[in-house]
Image (cartoon, rainbow, N blue to C red; front, side, top):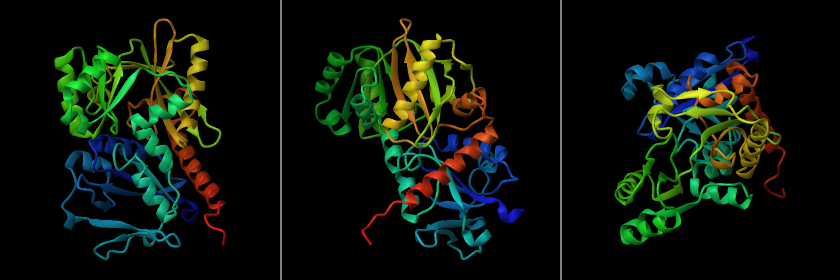
Length: 367
């Protein structure tokens, strides 16, 4: 029976500010994955970007990463004819480091922005989730919004600024924000998730501080008009024929859904299904699939919306690698839609294998 199990490499941690979120997501997957179908190998990536074989997310959450000489640092051998992991100290890995699929549970830069996906593509290995294009578009809020605009999906008014512009002509940039967006507004690093670096500005002084905070995290800043309404999220699952879950509403403990509110369970509540008119629910699910297809996502995504008191819908963003913690919306939405957590993990793995096989049918040269 052991020989018939698929060998899944769970990849987690990483260099981004969402390192701890990734550990929690991976811990939940390790607990829930069906061991009768899968052999699970774990690779933890520390904040310096080093990869270590066999470390467990639960241990890393409690104790942190062990010293490098107490575990096996590994690297991916990028050989499309024989992809495998290799221990840098010469240690023999299980199954010679070979595997069937990689399950990246890496949030933020160097995890869901297309970089790790590009590495896996170069090695010619199957993996869970969106490819290079879908991941990079889903990560960059500026480019994401440009694609949504091209597809005529309704969004809040926004402007994009570069850190270099803020350094050279700060007052002009602030004047532009006040003229085009006004107050209150949200200031966001273009390439981070989990609300890291996001601030709400109600006047010029707060805007100045918010811009300083955002530029710590990214060279590109997105400033959006504040939309007052229900914060609603929809989960999407699939490849070429994606499906959407029931919507869920977030009741933030703070003024907006902060990092702490998402992962500390300190008072924010989730209403699943969201209390919405049937026609609005249907349109949200349709728009979630449209957003998924717009960025060419695959596997999984969570799509976030605002719904005003007049039932206007504004698309906020898509997250192509949403959290998998016990209080994360993505698995909860699918559970409410009839797919239990363990089965959801199984479907994501199968979708990754399906996408890989589909790509193998494409030629990249005339030979």
